[in-house]
Image (cartoon, rainbow, N blue to C red):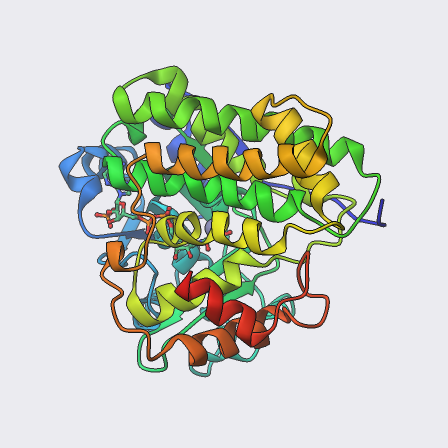
Amino acid sequence: MEDFSFQNKTAIRFGKHHIDEELHDAVAQFAQKVLLTYGGGSIKKSGLYDRVQKALADLQVFELSGIAPNPKIDSIRDGQKLAKAHDIDVILSVGGGSVLDASKVIASAKFYDGDAWDLVADRGAQSRSDIDQLPVVDILTLSATGSEMNAGSVISNSDLNIKLGTYGPNTPAVSFLDPQLTYSVSKWQTAAGSFDVFSHLAEQYFDRATANDVTSGIIEGMMRSVIKWAPVALAEPDNYDARANLMWGATMALNGIARSGNKNGWTVHPIEHELSAYYDITHGVGLAILTPRWMKRVLSGETQARFARYGREVWHLTGKDDLDVAQRAIQATYDWIKSLDIPMTLPGVAINSEEKFVEMAQEAVRIGNLNQNGGYVNLTVDDVTALYHD
Ligand code: NZQ
Ligand code: ZN
């Protein structure tokens, strides 16, 4: 097990009744001027927008709408202007991970006088911790990213075809997690979000640290849960237990607990971020297409014991031959993803041209440091290019 520090200050308000009872005070504790951020309109359709406006009626609420999936730097620039012009005190993010990711960077950009892209491009790998950050309160409407309890954001610059992670000094101050708000999430986004959760767990499970049984066991339990509940949520969108387990599972998968004691080199995320950067595809779907391919590619004499443990603990497979159990575990992963109606090929998400694959692979390897012990198993540009082609 590796050395680690752990602290997470986000206050979680999970369940059916917190929003109406506590939203006002959670926001008003930070003073009067609120920037309400949201996406393309799902919160108006669901009636959540009206509920929020009613709860905050005595505060001064400014708005930034239209934050897109794979949030773009342009929205952050707009938010930076609004936050400065109105001297905003607190941001209330209402939506999925994209709205929240953008809100966290806007919260820093209020205290930065240059172009907001600097906060992503120059600091991607490091943090923005030397810059102040407005408090962020959120109402989450989609289970996937874990952004509701971590300090990360992933921001795209469409002009440059770049999608990068950036880290602020704080996790959200208060996160309202009401599973009922996710009943309206489409099947596509439900499958994608569920796989994003699974991928966060896999990235942390297949790690170079050894003998980290506490974290491994926690992750195995959370993997079993998402495998069990994702199909239920697809079949019965308003099944509370399914939505609740997916929501809390998403939060727990990426709030720091599942990384403790690991080396934490991620592989499939940097490879996927290139797909989203170049083709603006849904993050979780890109991960779902790539993950079984990656598993097959890195399975070897050295890794088979880990994959076999994954097969036995997560998929309940039996048998003494590690390689055989490992191969069946990878097949089970593939079959589960396919059963969620996720297309398993890049043409299935309208990526038909292969001419950019080498360029994308170069970027993934550079950003993820994939050929220099950045991930679980070293990958070269050729490996990553082949993975896109598989
Ligand atoms: O924009 P609106 O109208 O709200 O519609 C959204 C959007 O079109 C819709 N939606 C959200 N809640 C809904 C709903 N539709 C109906 N009912 C609801 N209750 O769903 C669409 C997708 O929303 P988005 O926020 O993009 O999804 P998600 O939460 O999966 O976020 C994905 C983004 O997070 C990044 C990804 O790269 C991607 O950009 N990630 C952030 C991480 C983090 N901060 O730690 C880690 C992740 O690995 C990930 O990279
Ligand atoms: Zn992810």
